[in-house]
Length: 323
Image (cartoon, rainbow, N blue to C red):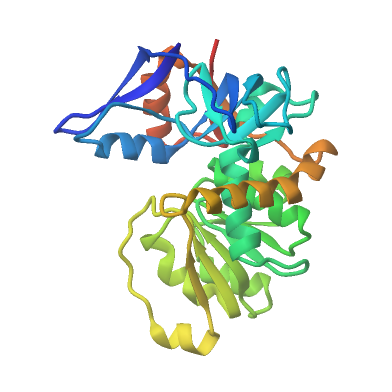
């Protein structure tokens, strides 16, 4: 089968599409014939950092049909339409834990389904599990044009957060975000985040911040927060080192929270998948999730897909289609 592989190199890992053996299903596993797989920036940075060790298949999310089930699996059958979160997903076949996959409604395309798992599981963990967003509370998402941001904004809107605020350097992208539940857009290229948040919230500040930018917005984020606010950092695309005014932390009784799958156990990862499935699948079945698919690339065009993602001009998800 075809798979996207990282080949270790002293100067940084190199991506290749290779032919490898189809995996063999274990008694407690499900084998899925992958039809599409979402692309994520973390896969690119991890590939570049791989300078030694064995070659590995990349990818953390997929959608496709169940091709085979293990002897001890009862929840799934061959032919079931599924999407899931896992490892080695950018390949024609992937092995998955039965708890790591979710059903795909017949009304949803493979491309749409493949864009759901990583973005919504990550966003749900950030917004609901760690951010503890409650109906009627306010939320701000920094760097609001990628897949996780698009998912976080929708979750906040579905949870009846008010207002839902999004920040971006692109006025065009902010305009597009209105259809995903954004009440207030902040154009950081021409207006102050702190002033806009405070005027919008009647000087109270924002209850939850989902930060995908990092260092450049850290100080403004802290100043923008309400007493008892929760600051959840998901990514550091703009930098990872920032200064913290402990007086602000103390006076506002803030919670600073970092989230990642890299240091989670397998059990913790599966709990995140199941929590997202519990809360989000009803909305998915009702057709209340709106899709933001920027582009599709064939598996063989993986280098072009990576180059496009690193330009940081996309809106929503980039998806690989797999024949």
